[in-house]
Picture 1 (cartoon, rainbow, N blue to C red):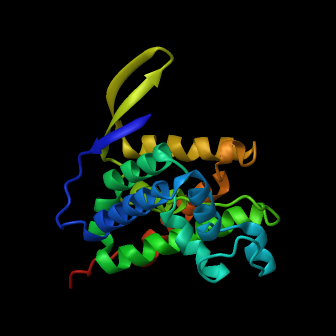
Picture 2 (picture 1 turned 180 degrees about the vertical axis):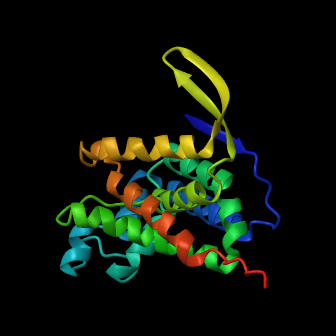
Amino acid sequence: MIPIKDDIPSSTFPYVTISIIIINLLVFIYQISLGLSGEEQFIFRTAAIPYEITRHVDTVPPSLVPVPFTLITAMFVHGGLLHVGGNMLFLWIFGDNVEDTFGHLKFLVFYIASGIIASLAHIAMEPASTVPMVGASGAIAGVLGAYFILFPRAQVKTIVFLLFFVTVARIPAVIFLGFWFLMQLLSSGYGPAGGIAWYAHIGGFLAGIAGVFLLRPRRRRRV
């Protein structure tokens, strides 16, 4: 399923969501400008590598920032056009409403925190892995988790693939995102297949749900 848009209007301009999208796209353009070998070096120097983080070491090639901070830099680096395109599509559709609810600054903190927690969830399951972990999907999973709680009745216009049949349908957010999360749970049983950190998605989604109860403005009680 590929989401196209939702039906929840935003009352404020999503400065943070759009800024994050722009930064990710600019970083990706810079990556591909380095050529294949240069891009590979860049990914290794900005990625979060579980082995380095759990053992507090910096292997070759050295990271561009102190190793703990790769948990942040990794969020803005992607492994290919489909990787960055898919992530930014989900952020564009679901991020503005969550930002609208939390406020700009809280949303930024929430996004970064969700990404860090997501990465730590993957690292906890693969502590000795030397495979570089990059991408915004963990942080975006946090956005999806928050949206799941905040806007369960929203309708998500979605391209649905059923074998050789393709259609467009409106699916309630609680079903669309619930199905997305279920797929992450089922896929996690196969480990990091296809280079995908499933536990990062799971950890990010759960962090997003928790973030709603910590950051959502509380309504004042009427006296």
